[in-house]
Length: 358
Image (tube, rainbow, N blue to C red; front, side, top):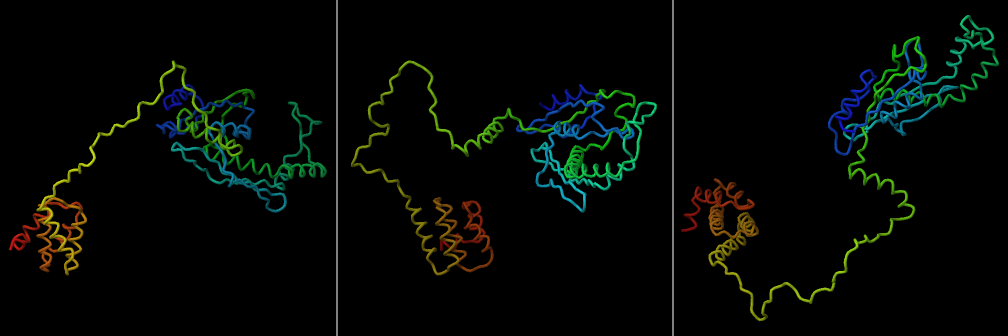
């Protein structure tokens, strides 16, 4: 959906708990689009801990799916520390509004069987044989056999509980959600009472041709790897009346040029030939610095007589060995392309024109 559609959708749920990221509602790339989802949850989908409602594992999974949360497999581990202590590690990630993955912090969760057994001892075991006036079960102390059975059950699920706890913490961290919601439901409200949560996620725009082609290539990759590329098939032409496809009489579109007539040779300016010859003399002279500059002028392919005349004048000045203005003259002669205005101005300043004429 577009940003406007997303805002209109959010406006329908004015009393919802919104976890929509403002950056998702800005103008996104044509390759991406935002998706906003409303999740309704019941009261019995939360743990009621002294009036603070903490989402259960399955509730957090619904939130994570609506927000486009995935998990980094390289950061997800579960290790055992000591006897009966498991530590899970997880890291969640979401697709950002720029198309890059945003990683949340690496979260850990410890599940210690000994600590859980101590909690069970303090809480006691539900005694359904002795109910209170409201029909609720009473409590009694665990026997040694019952504690041993509970310990075995905790050992069975210890690794899984550590992994689940780490994932739940990573989900809350990447969503920016608090652990519990104070006063989310009333004390006397029924378990079927619902509340609405809003989440946003960035997804690839499958309506975009570039994205669609990439998705199709990804889907076809396993099949291509197994069976090779599909054979090329000719596209059937639309049905039409028969037409003559006989090629025309052999011939060409080139103009006929009679043999024996030589092509016209372009006229060469005698003055240009003279100037190039003079440059050649400088290029083979004894002064290596001047000879290199003269060769650079020849290699430039310059054919304007006025430019070559000015260049010869500056070469004559450089050959005198006068250091005044020599660097400016040398720089102007190796400039690409040669600038007539600059060369003529330097030739006038150095008085090289007069020396060349003499």
